[in-house]
Amino acid sequence: MKRAIAIGVLAALTSFTAAAETYPQRPITMIVPFAAGGPTDVVARIVAEPMSRALGQQVVVENVTGAGGTTGITRGAQSAPDGYTIMVGHMGTNGAAPALFKGLKYDPATSFDPIGFLGGVPILIVAKKDFPAKDLKGFIEALKAGGPKINQAHAGVGSVSHSTGVLFDSQVGVKPTLVTYRGTGPAMNDLMAGQVDFMADQIVNVGPQVAGGTVKAYAIATPERAPSLPDVPTMKEAGLPGYEVSAWNAVFAPKGLPADVKAKLVAAVEAALNDPTATKRLTELGSNIPKADERGPAALQKLVESEVARWTPVLRSAVESNQ
Image 1 (cartoon, one colour):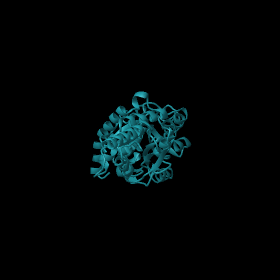
Image 2 (tube, helix red, strand yellow; image 1 turned 90 degrees about the horizontal axis):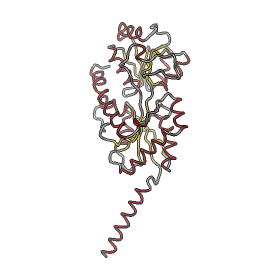
Image 3 (cartoon, one colour; image 1 turned 180 degrees about the vertical axis):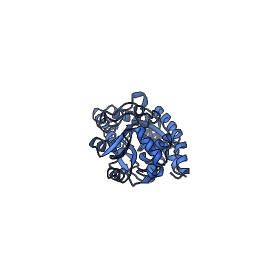
Image 4 (cartoon, helix red, strand yellow; image 1 turned 60 degrees about the horizontal axis):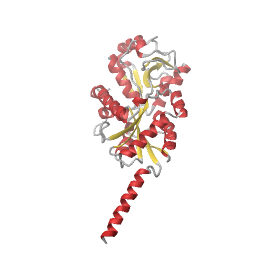
């Protein structure tokens, strides 16, 4: 009997070890906490393809929407830490969320195993095409003079356009009237129609409208100009050097992954960022491909901690002042 038990235990341990060594043995779910077709979803699907090849199993994107992306991230955080559920978070869900959502069921800095940084997407300050200011300096002067008469669009509390817009307002010392939309699409439609005055948003969303002349861009929040919009000055060139921000995306997993499983996921993200087709598609979207020393878990953890520290005072102040 003892021998049989020993053999059974050994067999179980052998089976467990083999399973760990051959991870993954089934498809992996990648939670995207936003609707299909949005910028984060597009980035996730681009990297999921080469990640699938690297892992030898399909990485399946699942869109779990709600509460500024925190619904999907919460589900991911509460999943088993076995490598079969990962998630794509961004500067809102894993940076700004603690300041915006009371009772948040995860801590961006402690509830996850960071896997890999996918890169940042530049932010632009854009206005309706007939806004009278000719440059950023004149635009800020107009905002200060207009006060609450100026309308600022955003895609909902916790969205990139909301967080980056509030940061801009805070830095230049203005308090426009915030107009909430159910997504960037309807916000941009009203901006093009002249129903609202301005907004902050990602180049992925506003680039085509700027290029087509249906909205006016005052500056881009990056150290260098965007190749796709060479006539749009950087914030530094336009006179606001402190406003540098991007809508970054990154891959996370529930806290407690086995070391070998985490290593395989980290390697898969690295493979995706080295894949020529993926990098070409990401670059065409306006995403900045991170350098090698910016991609891994340690760099991502540092980024998350710095982003929480950056956004918390700005957004809490905005909430307290009902902006």
